Image (cartoon, rainbow, N blue to C red; front, side):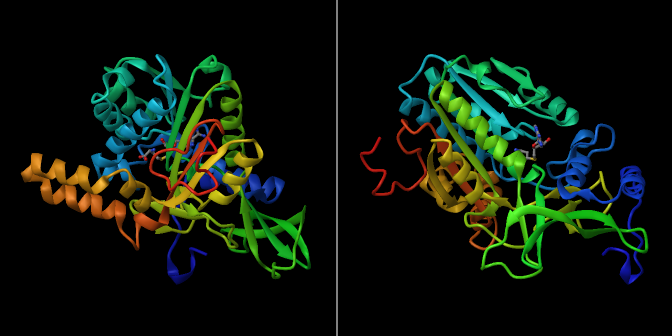
Length: 375
Ligand code: SAH
């Protein structure tokens, strides 16, 4: 996949290790490969490097424009109002990266002082390097706790919870299956004749193939993402819960292999330089929504990022910021244009709100007739 065109793929310690493992035990599942690439205890991508930001391998919405985090901060304040302005609120961010979104969100929250004082912030982060960056930037703020593991519902003692995650779901491992002779088979990572990584077809998975499926079709699903939905259901069973998820992905089920690698701001094959390449997959929001609904949650969206930010007043906020900082006006405008781009982040990224069914529809999402007055 990478070695034709006379190019030698970059050998990495993790690549060697995985090849030895495959040599000894046979092909591994796509999710195992992805987990090792991202989270291997010594060589995993998220274990060892400062992945995010201009100096890292990819840039995210909060790193592009401060307006993104500020709007989400105000979104949280409005949700707090919808929850009846509780004296204590847990604000949980999954995968906070460099902490930029939270810095901006807490700054804009100062406009609503009672909301700000109600906050206990929880940052859920697996990457030691990023955790250090978060501590540097947020260590001075009041009421912040860090978690290595996903916090259980008991952490919040039944108090209201808001959960946010930007580009978190796409970093969760996925499984792939491939249709062969009317049966789904696991798609696994093995080795080709030249000792390079290659997809191979494994055992039947036991999932049924329906009429719409053609031979050779690939489907993806993510147990880790299901686990996120289940966790939200548990939070909502313990107390009021609202959550916001923004990521690149699809709001309808899709067919095809979306595993991709990104290194130094360029797309590379997902098997390239394991441990030094960020490996992600497109988020299947329809699967997340279904799981959440089955668990009794209310669902707002899925909408394109541009629609969500537009509804929150991104243009107004950017123009105010530009008038206040004329020297940076060009930069602010360019940043917001990138977040809203019709052929880029504005549509490729989607937003969804998952919440306790008793809460009204969340801000920034269109209210459907069926939802009106049902709260
Ligand atoms: N939200 C940030 C960073 C996105 S990158 C931004 O928008 O800039 C994905 C983030 O999720 C990183 O911080 C990564 O270390 C973290 N992460 C990935 N998998 C995780 C897991 N299983 N548990 C906790 N954090 C995780």
